[in-house]
Image 1 (cartoon, rainbow, N blue to C red):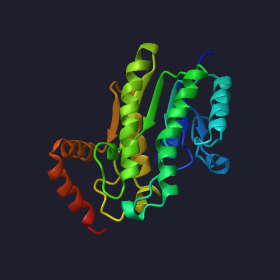
Image 2: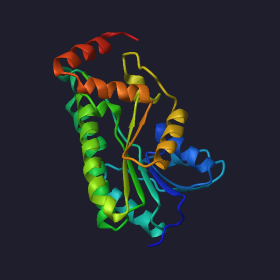
Image 3: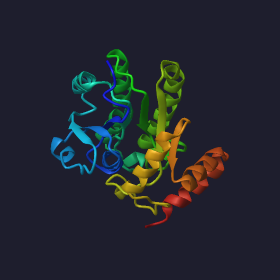
Length: 250
């Protein structure tokens, strides 16, 4: 199956947040965007100022729907890029967890993505570039966000492995690790968020990163490098700093 064009991008999670901002950024630059999320109505509200938009709604956590969506997009023509912006986050101390929330976090942030990548391979729908969104929270364990941090750390690890496996097949696998971006997810945080970006700023940083060689796309650099430094500290030192950071009220 030939590519529709080198400018065709399939964006999953395009109805809100960073995913929608990236979709609108790409459309403004003349790309053909295939937009997916659960809500068709929200997808149809994406602002298009220059490219062409196709809407393929589906729920990534629904295995049958995911299998069908991959087949539907392949029938259109394998996109050059596939970008996935999905995730859920429910901050809570362990003793306050609602188990259904934990299961949803693991399913949405990790299991669904593993199944999606499996379907790409099974159906022969390998793009030139595949970018999955994890988070800088995957660098270190964050108090009150353990399920989220754990799934993002696992996703970073998975992308590292997948890059080694798929690079010889001509697929540029990347992981996108955003810092704090103002979305409904980060609005749940009860602590000050340093270097907070707008979705539009995140979209521009994502776009630049996708054009470059290398494995990781991360922003803002001051936060990501700071957290990488924290991750390199002895566990006892990091624990003290993390508790202090999260104890500060907004």
